[in-house]
Amino acid sequence: MQQLVPQLTDNLDRTIALYEQILATERGKQRAVVACDLDTLGAVLAREEELVELARPLEAERAMLRAQFAQADERLGPDSRLKHLLALLDGPERDLLAEKRRRLLTLAGQIQEVNRVNFQLLRCSLDLVRGILEEIFGSAPAPGTYDAAGRQDAPSQAPTRVDQVL
Image (tube, helix red, strand yellow):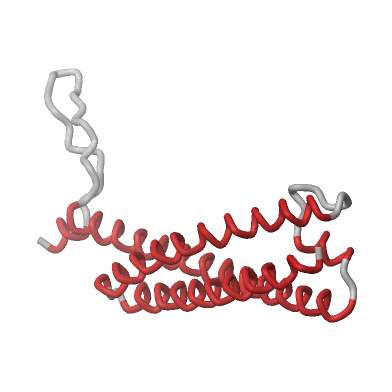
């Protein structure tokens, strides 16, 4: 099992580097949304796709290492997590892997928070655009109604601000 630790350490180092790139990209997305910079936003979205593709082989490699650790020690199952492995290690290897785990968890939390803010920013931006479009074009008028004599009543919808100005 000890011979697998350097491979896992290398995988975690590359994963940490990838998470740092993802965090920087998500912060760039936030700046682009706030600045209404669609060109930059498009570039950021393309970069996100690249990073997702880089994550796939890292995840596959980590799954392979998890299976190898499970074969090396019956106390670990194929679905064991890094925290389960840490319980079986001691000394500097345990400390090193524990620090990498803490770093990954911190980065994951930061990414989650930036994504939450980005989601809210995008949602507010869409609400603003929708409101502007409704002000410009108004919402769809209600179907006309008819009185008992067959005359069409006035639309039941109040005029939009644009109608009031014109």
